[in-house]
Image (cartoon, rainbow, N blue to C red):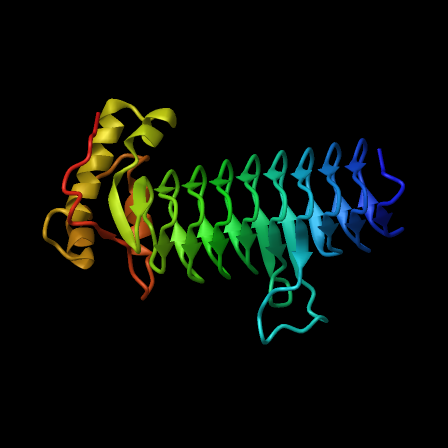
Length: 266
């Protein structure tokens, strides 16, 4: 299961049935779970902790030092990867930039070719990131997000669950759950198809649409919309939308694109 040209440090820990391709490198201290495949020319750094049944594509570099001027190679930080992820060719995932810092990928994610995760990025479960997307330090992506090809994210940006980002778009502000991100810091509407696929009922989708309209179409600012929202009791699928909005930091939220005044809700 190990190609004779692969270099695996004697202190690396490999689980059962791990395959390692030609000229791959697994550094001292790395941990790779059962059933993983490390393809040719990939590099797994010594600070990587990887779960089961992951695919690491050709030429990917996992656990490299962060691109941070203040970083010292003596810092002890990690990359943690869950189970059943596909991380394709030439992806780069950097370890945390501070002692104890962690860059993490959850379970069953798909990172397509050339994706870059900078230091301290947090990726949830069932996330898809298409080719050549770039996530700067401390970006957080919640569960079941789809990021189109060539998207870019400023450091500390958050992307809410079940949102979708159109290809070749950029974000320097937080993108709330359930929306379609587009252009530069723009929102094109609700990700209704994604809500249906996630099992939201018609009533649940309607309540999410009501919340979306209150925030973006009522003429209220964010503080006023939050105050109005606080006067209602929202369902368990909608309350996380308001929790996300309330926790937005000084960078703020993406705005509704005014050329997109309506979206389909059914």
